[in-house]
Image 1 (tube, rainbow, N blue to C red):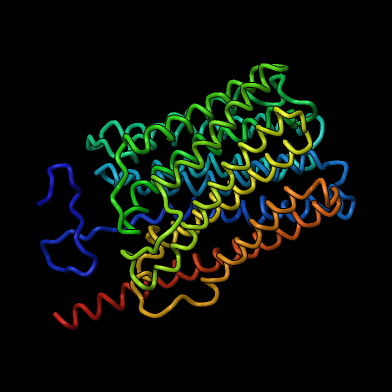
Image 2: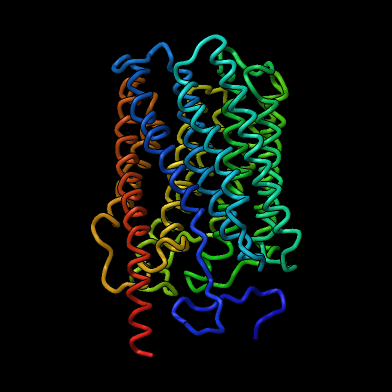
Length: 460
């Protein structure tokens, strides 16, 4: 029986004069397109180039620090941030039993966020002097406008949502607060406000802490919220209660708070806050996949055509556990006074989280819940080669990138950078193939739907 707050949507093939057809809003594809552009022309491209520049094997060696930060933020703000924002404004209203958000609201948000990413990608690697300073201000303002808009939109949705104790709502609420915090931090933690060491460049410690804040807060909460709502269903398990997910969720957010605080501290106090935050994050990342995700089993509730996509989900959650273990190991090395091992373990954890958890999950969950793949999921047969290839390419990239960091002291700097560049090539190919599959699905969907409708009318 339908509840009063449910939104009635007719099945797509039902027809009749009294039926108002539900029209699919495809503006979320704009966020996906911007995310893919940022990944292919920015973040993952720099993942190939930047390590070679660092060793002097490619142009730009004198700009390596700028290339490093541009790479990190294009990956996080562009690839992960744009994708999460687009899917959040698409699916959170549906989780909450609210009407879909109109394009008059989502398109301006897309413009702000895309403008910030484009400005960073174009100017940060090469700009100097007043140009670099002006570009960093533009990035901060556009980012703040986009992030605050996403937060306001989601806050309004959640405040009017059906009241429930499901953990997805708690994660979504925390993530909404963190999107607002991200907006404020973009205005405050800038090279022009005393946090930088050069033109358009944040200090390395502040930049690393800021990256982790965003990975855990605005991005991480929505990752675990969507997983807690859907992954147990895919694998035929009970949805976790808020008590089961609440403790590791609180640890995740406390970790983000400590890391955010560490940015504004100095000396030993800053290092202690950052280490404490990363240790808490490590514990949360070991715990959360066990209660809100999946690290074993078969997705028996999925259609046969969609089941292979569950490999991305399993690999993503296993990567999260690996990242958690590495963060605890990094903290131990820090306590033992091994600064080099601590640095390398943090680097390995960052990429286990970024490539393993975030990127694997983006591709896997997109194939499982994004509307653009909905018709494809209903097809019979087995996935084609181009659908299977991204998983193995990303898996190889994670193993190579994380492994090269962990063995960095033994292999040396040049070998580590060359391995990182090869991992970047593998990841870039995976994203390129996924982008082609998105284009293919988006182009095929209208024709397939028209054929289905014609078939339905013919059989009526």
